[in-house]
Amino acid sequence: MNRMKLTLLALIVSSVSLVAVAQSAGVAQTVRVTESSNVIRLSVKPRAGVVKFQVRNASDDGHDFWLRGGGKTWRTRVLGQSGTASLTATLKKGVRYSYWCAVSDHRSDGMSGGFVAR
Image (cartoon, rainbow, N blue to C red; front, top):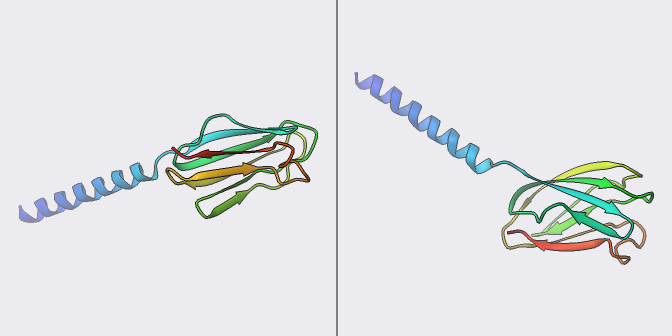
């Protein structure tokens, strides 16, 4: 009887641990990024946690997407017309992030922005 109780207790502890790990991993937020002439648009303001940025080039010019904040930098390759790419970043709450296109002079032409992960 005592052995059965210990086995049952071990199963319960294991189950609770698995649930806690699954909840802490969370579900990634998806942010659609559209790049076109002189502008980058984000579909929503990114939240803290795991964020998947789905980037689409909606112009004739090549574009890439850079993201920097919290001591880290992420980037995509240069995308041709109608090209797509994605990158996944773990954002920290309260940290300011900047994003831009580094192709040619696109950044100074207005292809940049920023947000604070909420």
